[in-house]
Image (cartoon, each protein chain N blue to C red):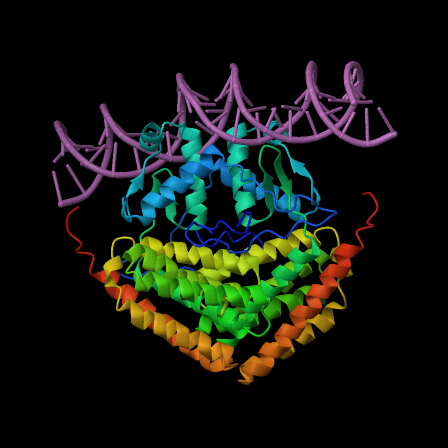
Amino acid sequence: MSDHSPQPDGQPDGGPHPPPTPERPFATLSLEHSSTVDRVAEELRRALFDGEVGPGTPLRELALAEAMGVSRSTIREALGALVAEGLATREPNRGVFVTELDPQAVHDVGLARAVLEVAGARRWAGASDEEREAVREAIASFRDAAAVGADPSELTAAHLAIHRSIAALAGSPRLLALADALYAEIRLGLAKVDRIRRNAEDQVAAHQALVDLLEQGEVETAARELEEHLAHAETSMLEALHLPHDEGT
Amino acid sequence: MSDHSPQPDGQPDGGPHPPPTPERPFATLSLEHSSTVDRVAEELRRALFDGEVGPGTPLRELALAEAMGVSRSTIREALGALVAEGLATREPNRGVFVTELDPQAVHDVGLARAVLEVAGARRWAGASDEEREAVREAIASFRDAAAVGADPSELTAAHLAIHRSIAALAGSPRLLALADALYAEIRLGLAKVDRIRRNAEDQVAAHQALVDLLEQGEVETAARELEEHLAHAETSMLEALHLPHDEGT
DNA sequence: GATTGCCGGATTGTCGGACAATCAGGCGTT
DNA sequence: AACGCCTGATTGTCCGACAATCCGGCAATC
């Protein structure tokens, strides 16, 4: 929860820069300093999300250092970041391991999601125009992705982007940062079992219906609908995790 | 968000160990490994909360290393932890500084608090007995502290402990971890302006009334009451931060 | 045969030193 | 006053080192 928007990759912030004004001529310019640690952490995240290293796998400092051609110190710092994001777990004097999602953790993530997203949905009317528009755009992207039959991982990303935009309605960077961390954990759990996706078209329709309710001011109905949707998603994810017989690559 | 309970000191978890059973004879035993980094981080937190180093102060690696008699690497790691908790901010190539709370940040913290605590309050009936009991105990402690006229910092701690116990009602470690981070930021902001506390007895009564509502099942009323309380707390904190003329020491 | 004691390899935790890259501020030049 | 340059301070990253800790296996013990 450091810079309060780890933005674990995948969902672009959407917020374009403010236009330049006569008094502030270069307001559009910005440049992201990328430290080595950042790049290492990013690469590790990618590997986790792509399922290249499964839950429980130890992340050895020396091995990683040699593999990525950087010093052990740098790896150590990057691992610290992953641990802080919940993607990995540090066991003192034993090392850090890719986080394993037990049913309890899945439930907790579901619970936390519900609180954040319902809070966002309830604030639909009070949110800014940009925030509401972001939700519509997220749905549109999801619809497009489903239409062209994108791969499961892209569908998942687009799907989560919708929920993220809903959580963003609350207008709190800190809450959004937590939501991002939760979505990252979800992606971690779904890395290897993405195929379980049901009919994408149905999903699009369901989410569209949800937003329709919001647009019509039926906030409470939408909130209940959302909670149900999330409860369903949770059991669905539990099933997926209980059938880890994926047989070796 | 690593172990999901940084427990930034102050509020003990309250949850005692599960009793030993015939099959698990030593369930009560546990031992906290304290690494050097942990202790450094803890000492830094203390210094921040006690106002020994004010917001905006740069935390120089070399200086800290020499002062605390540890290596720069260790300091660096500890600073990373503080940054991850939001207590400090890292500016690339410039160093890490004690976080300064601008009005916008205060508002965000207030917003996030409201979401988390209201969510907890709404779940009063659904929470476990221990969690409800924790709220009552927190209030009792606060009352005691007010009665014996404890110092402001202790009062603040006891006060926040109440709100923490309410957030805990939601039953989600992840949400609670975020709440802890928020309380830590609040403590940071209040480090030097603790005296603004109004009549402690009134505060006790107000919180007692809130819990009474919950006990009576008036959840929605309690939720509204709580939101109002938090909004008030926010403006009160803003006032405090706008009068930083603390002079001397 | 189960428990205990001990050894060895692997890995982390911490240290110290080193150096390039970057930044802030001062100083002189134009 | 704006620009360019230099210097000192600080960070980012690297390397090598060593003790502490942990795991596993093997031998000794009851």
